[in-house]
Image 1: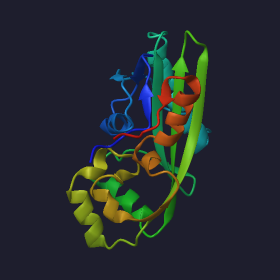
Image 2 (image 1 turned 45 degrees about the horizontal axis):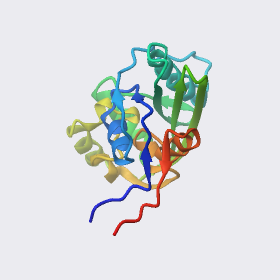
Image 3 (image 1 turned 30 degrees about the vertical axis):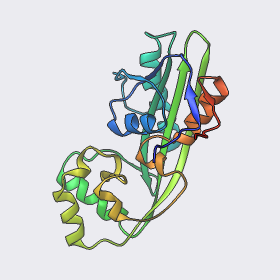
Length: 207
């Protein structure tokens, strides 16, 4: 059965300022038309920034770096952060750090924050939100951790796991947006673009 998306894009150009294939996939599934221009923004945060502040700051940096050179476009930037006990878990630098992260998350609940920023320079629009999802891992045996590490999946993912990939087996439950954990809170992004008239609602009915 054909999937019917209850909205459609207008002709206003949209840029995704991210190299993430996961974010591209989510936008494609939502029926949005866009081009990808990877941001070269500095992805560091001040040491005293909270995780929420950091997610917002990095998404703004990414969006702004592209928006300044494309003032007539809508530009979407995003940054996803995994947090446990107030500690930000970025992408692991190697096997040992990935092992430490997965071990730390096993059998516990952690927070995934995704900041997204939407800029349109010519229209004077600068919008940033940070969405939070709680993720609970099942208890993991050393063998399970080593097996997951052997897949190679953890090494380019914040928190050393991918909920949409093999890492789904690590997850016992989530509270909040699933797509937020993947890398973009699609519901909130769609709602904002609808409010701005970038996409319009349709009936979604077909014969």
